[in-house]
Image 1 (cartoon, one colour):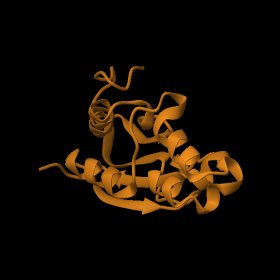
Image 2: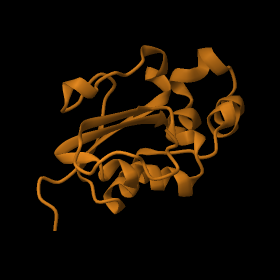
Image 3: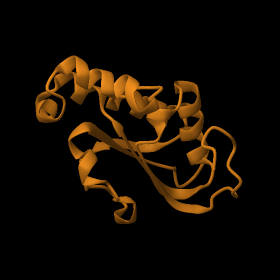
Length: 141
């Protein structure tokens, strides 16, 4: 599946969507499209769970010193390595989710969330990631 193109699935089909460390590999334009496309196939009331590297954690650097030794290296990893094309903080992710029509948008912690079926966070990404969940409203309009 190409996250940057319309998905070949019906509207109101999926019970939930989990995405971990995918959106940062897309340009902002494509990532915003992908978040918007998540909205369409979700059933009303279903949840979207997003995890991406948290640029604020890389800038603060506190929990990443052992892994990266220097703050500029850490920020470079978040912004440029692994073919990253965008960086995210919680406020931007929440703003984009709201613009795409999601409600009940909130930052959540690693391993926590409203829909237990979507909690599939990888431990190796815990210290460097942000976690946001957003709900497709039960009724549109």
